[in-house]
Each structure stands twice: as structure tokens, then as C-alpha cells.
Length: 262
Length: 209
Figure (cartoon, each protein chain N blue to C red):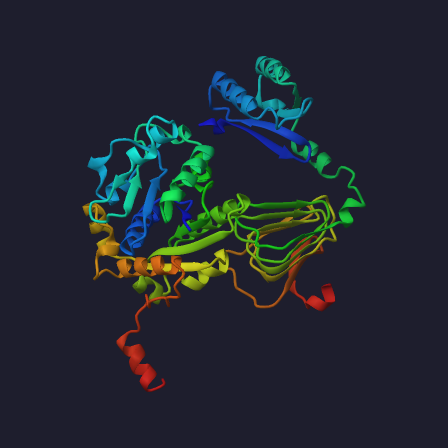
């Protein structure tokens, strides 16, 4: 059974593309056959994160307009044999592809792949509507900031209107030090507003930036805490029951207090 | 790009609103594209209002011709306050105002629930959401959005919420906004008009229902 997942957020810059790339590598590392579709036409980035920019021959628009079969446009990842990217055009805009075309493309891809992951553009306009049209599951990415949470709420409403009921939440870029001081929205605050199933809490990690720049998703880095969080998310999407890791570590004094029950 | 021209639905019907800072020929062009793409949406003979003080006579004539081509009627109206109020207190269908709309989900940002009668929400009302009711509003959850009860002028309308953290509370034509430092109260609260202002009091659910 193949699954079509759309990664969306409403607000830009919260980590949709990073999440898409990491989920793709994560599934592929588990031996699943995965295709990532970039639908952010005109502002494509997914190829950069995977380090595949120089291998692109054709793009999504060539496929949807019937110029080439999709197999010709797929770019295989250099490390992961079972991971493919369907890049989009950098010269066209969002109106170049419509929901119907994505639907028929995805149903074709679903025959060959275990997971089809769609990277959605920011916003709630045409590009978003197109990207979500084919999805079975929607993964909403947000960060612990009030504007990102508001936008996520709106997106969840829009997804509901499009009758996408399987919606999962990922909270990205959590800063443990700030949460501890009470300067950042906590998971409880976010949960109270969004009230949807959370499948991932990703700590803010500098390694994400360095790995993005190198075209190597952070999930392959064994020492990165964000990488570990992504691995757990992949496990949860595969149906495993993985406990959430502790993002706000207990300090020395907390432990001390606990021992002496202060 | 095409957001310079907007059709807005109001109690008095459809209203055409456009950005006056944009060149009028560009407005006409966008309007044409909009009508072209949504011609099925506007039924033949639909009346579209436009604020009379926003356009010149020549522009009005041009718009009338354009609208006629799509089977619509343009009406230039005076949208000053007195007129708006007139629409507001138009006869309310008494039967309709007894209706109760029940919403069994969370109302999220950007969503709007509008009812002539009363509204019961079994869920939260999130920030950015709007509930407008001719009668009362009862929220069995947390209210963080904008709520307007007695929207047609019923001064006795009430708003009840398990947790009242509303951005704005409106009853009839009175408006109260949340204080800038909102304290959370863990009991059910009810907003109503008392001596000409909106007051919020703790209530017992059993007494209200």
C-alpha cells in the first residue's frame, strides 16, 4: 500500500522543505521506495537540500504537460538507491500545474512507490490547493511562534474544508533554553490551540543549517538531535509507537531537587 | 495580483470594493477576468453594490456596461453609517431567529459561522475565527476568537463560554475587547449587556441552560 503525504505549513520558513527531504531520506533508509515532489514552482529548493541540483534534466511541468514520461524527470538520490526526486520548474509559476494533473500523476506514482511525499509551497492560494489535492495524509509543520501557530490553525481549517482528515503535526525549531525560561510557546500551548495529533518535536539544531548547505539531510547525521527527532517521526509515520525524546533536559539542580524531594 | 478588486458579501447583498490607488483601466481588466472565471457563481440578475463616493460618474457608466455584459446589475449606493444601520435593523425573521445551529468541531482561524438564530459550538473557537449569531452563542470549549451575538440588534442576547478568552465580544451594536493582559479564569463565564455596557460574569451552566 502506498501512501501520499503532503508537507505543508501556511507560513514560510518553518521547515517544510527540510522536513520533506529528511522524511524522504528516512523512509529510503528503511528500504522504502520514495518519491519526493517539489510543488513550489518558481521557488524550488528541495533539489538543493538533497544536493541534486546539477542532475535535473526535466521537471514537473514537463511531466504534467505531457512532454516527457515521469520516469525521465525523476532524479535518483546519489546515496539512497530507492529515493527519487521530481523537481519543479524554476522559471514557471504556480499556475503552470493544476490539481487534476497532480492527482493523475500521484495515482500513477503510487503504483510504483511506497511513499509519495509532496512539498507544498507557503500560503493558501492555488499552489497550496494543488499540492494538497492528491494527499491521503497531511503533515503540518509549525514552529513555537504565535504567527506560525495561527497560520497552522488556518491551514488545518483549509485541509478540513478539502476533506483531508488525516492531519499530523510537527513542531520544529524548539529551543530548549527558551522553553525552560518560559519565553517560548510550550507544546501544551500549541496543543491547546491546534488540538491535532503531534508526531514530532524537533529541537533547534545548528547542524540542520550546515547539512542543508551541504545537501545532506540532517537525518543521516548520527550526532544531531534534530536528526534523531526526524528518525522518530519516520518511525511514527510507519506506525511504530515511539516515545517523544526529552527536548528540555533536566538540569543538575532539578535532579538534585528530585533526590531530596525539595 | 488580482486582489485589487474584491466582491464582499454583506447583509445588503454583494458589494464591489476596489483599490482606488490602482489605475482604473487595470481595475476594469482584473474585474473582467474575475467575472469571466466566476460567471457561474454570480446568478443572472445579481445586484452588485458599489459605494457611490468611491467612483466618478464616468467610471460608474463603464462599470454598468461591463456588468450588463455578464447579466449583472450595478447599483451605486450611499454607504454612510445611517444606511448601514438601516440594513442592520431590517425586519428579522422571527421564526429564523429561533433556529439553533450546532457546530460539532473546533472553529479555526479564518472560519466564520453565521446564523440568524443561536449558535452552539461543541469545541473551541480559535483566534481569528468569527461567530456571528442573531441570537445567543454558547461555546462548550475555549473561546479565543471574535463573537457577535444579537447581531440584528437583540440587546438581550448572551454569550457563554467554558473559558472566555475572546479577542472581542460584540452584543447587538456594543463592542468590548479583551484587556491587554488577559487573565485566565477556569469557570464558565457569560457576557451580556447590563446598563448599556457589556459585562462578563461567572455563571453556573445548569442555570443558563
